[in-house]
Length: 218
Image (cartoon, rainbow, N blue to C red):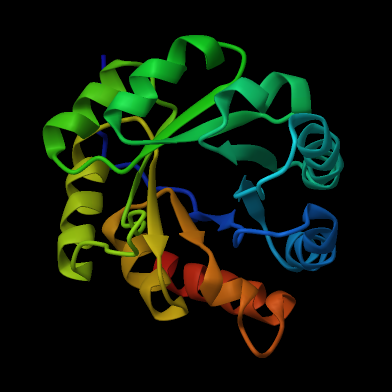
């Protein structure tokens, strides 16, 4: 059961959660990931892997897992709970309460089961009660739509005030990082705004880290 009633003790600085772009070849992604992981405190990487035969995919994911885990970060697969154990990943991110309910028993307690894509407070609470290790708010759906940023901040703030289970706020731009952290997100997820940054991903991650540090002092 999700535990209500957080205390007012000082929260630790929120940490980064990297969401990779869909990759045609995971081998080509490793350079960018290595640069990102060396540039800041990354708690987890959500891998959006390409279409490939299962054997190839498992081999490629294992390489990425080794890179990520050697830095102390966790590697999560995007909606592929059946591959988690065989590929050496740490868990899976499930999109929506139905996908979460279907997969959670195969992941817990050894692996991480995260949940996003909850459209209502009720669904978010059901995921928490079902054993979710975190809830993510603010990511775009399959059509690229996401709630208004004000609505995302409201959901993050509500969750952070009431529940002990960590909350991940998804930042579509670097400018959203500070407000999400200030609203109470324990983790801030970043995707294209870092991987596609013209300055390079290392510079973008350092920028993100600076914004998290500022948010902690506000």
